[in-house]
Amino acid sequence: MVVVSVPAEVTVILLDIEGTTTPIAFVKDILFPYIRENVKEYLQTHWGEEECQQDVSLLRKQAEEDAHLDGAVPIPAASGSNLQQMIQAVVDNVYWQMSHDRKTTALKQLQGHMWKAAFMTGRMKAEYALTIRQFKAQCKLASLSPLYRSETAGEMAQQLCTPHTCWYPRRSKEGIGFLRTRVKGSCEIVLTSPFRSLVQLIDGHFDTKIGHKVESESYRKIADSIGCSTNNILFLTDVTVEASAAEEADVHVAVVVRPGNAGLTDDEKTYYNLITSFSELYLPST
Image (spheres, rainbow, N blue to C red):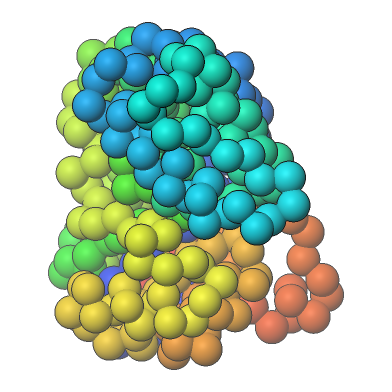
């Protein structure tokens, strides 16, 4: 097993989600198709709710900013518009944004609320790339290291992508949490009880409100928000463009290699520290 030694100055671990903690297949084959297939029904059901109206207002504002883009779909003002026509306009706008892989806060907010409703009603369950069978809980903790997550998905979506035991703890037969730990001799992912909320093991979430992961300034802002230096952070991601941006901000990085992730060039394989499991991280005891 290849082991990556984590520098002693690292006190914070920053996790990507898609392709790192959650399989890409779950995002592409489950999460996004769910939005496409259910957005119209969701809007019709929740249209009169304040939360839904806030989502629509944010999407309308985004549509106004996108008016200069080719094919952009406008959303008419609330007053004087036919309800079904307006709902269809929102649906078309969501389709357009998703077809162009937009990462707007407006889109991510609506998606997060839709996924929340799906998780709460049991229509969807989150998946992790790892299960408890891959780890052993026999370890002694030496000290603590805060754990954060960064993703273009909104904060709510990140929390929902923590295993579904967060919403239905009694339905889970197995669970795994990424506990902020330094373990003597090696880095262990400490297992959680199936009945414990796994969201509580994450110290914070960052999304596009703080910046995009391909921009080095985003990592400086994250460090400022946490209250540490950028070189105190270890960022785990499966995307080398993000890893490069983080390195420009003096953040330590390791690239996660998982089934379904984009392939790496020979140069990238040579340049970056690569891991296939979190158990391959070695944190010297303090």
